Image (cartoon, rainbow, N blue to C red; front, side, top):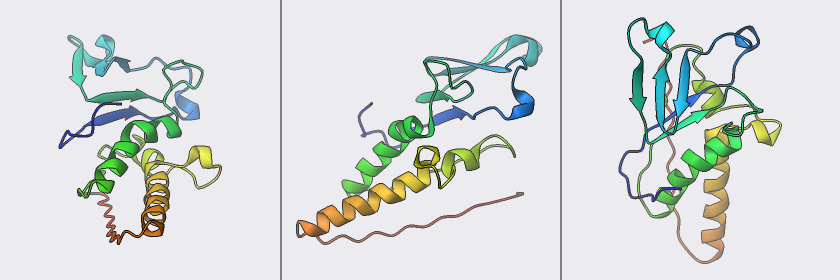
Length: 151
């Protein structure tokens, strides 16, 4: 994991495929932290987009598959560390309808392996708060959530 000193860190995740997409040609590929639009889809030349981290959740049998847990380890743990150091932190997800924002943020409550970033982060925050309070620390946590829909 990279250091937690970056003020802004941008991750991109290709969501798990839905049933009607399975078996179709992929329009995006990931190599390292670069996402490329497949040339046949782009029309002219391949378009590349670089991120701090690019996560592929399209094929569970791939060695590079990013599960909900691994996504949290990559993105959420660094946020938790920032908070514990006293910094504000923000999780911002953006994309068109159906691109996987809710899957990544919320996931499913059960089983635990399918919980998204927010459920895991809130759980870890309050586990750490309890630990700090037991050791005599005074802890103040403020959480806000905003969803902008159909803008």
